[in-house]
Length: 374
Image (cartoon, rainbow, N blue to C red):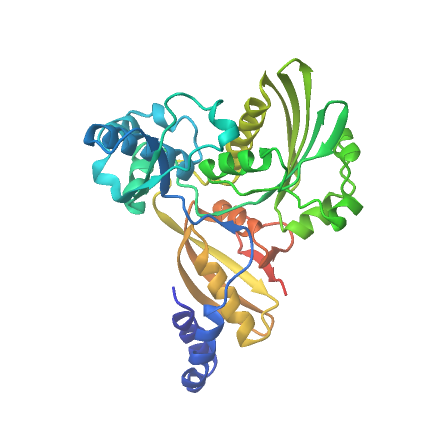
């Protein structure tokens, strides 16, 4: 629903003569970007290394890319085991929207000797039809995880050679890039700290290693993250690594242990485990295809700009297909949302953003109550 259509509803309740004057103002406000959890832009895209441009290789690459996209959009690592998905992967052409071949840069001269004998030189980028992929996922009995997803700050203390240090976003060894590439493949925004002067004043490897959480609120505020992944990684035997992880999301926490040969194994496993847990918490309801009406009441709307921001935000939520104004009084505006998954989906999605804050305990028979944040 557009801001101006919703405006027509509220102005009609108060003073329809103001409509002509206020619509241009609302249009400008609606065009402004909203803030909150990160929106993933490339959910329906994937790139696969290929040996050549032959038709058979391309078809196999289409299938591999489609499976990657289904995992990314559904949040389910085991989606390829569903017969409906397996059938689509075997005949992927009808899901393809566009594709192109990209050249892969050769390895540096000092790494050429270490490169595999058959290093790929081509990559096939594929974009799939979003509606067709969503329908495929739902037909497989899986849920579609929306584009707006919680960002997670990764605080990882690595012990190597007797020295412990926090992994930064620009580490020389390239492990931060490894983590972010793996996270991009799963469609989860994982953020690593800059470890500049401001971070060094509050974040210490020894604190992360010990699992202290005192300084986490300042770090999450700085990086606008919805959660924190704490990790400590160390080599327990030559090339055999152990990692202990703690994922903090709102008022919940989960912990697990990973072991494996090579640092990349335990890091990749942590990305997948985090993505699985995020999808389980925020990924919606399995098989949800129809929308139901959800009543919400928003206070703190004192100006037209406030009103337009609230409407724009509600209309931008992935689960919401329609926003209607049902009541306006001196202290609040009430809305009815058509939302897949109903009340609980709306609560989970809104909790990811920084536009509305829930007020009080939800009443199962009444509207959800929120306050518009500054």
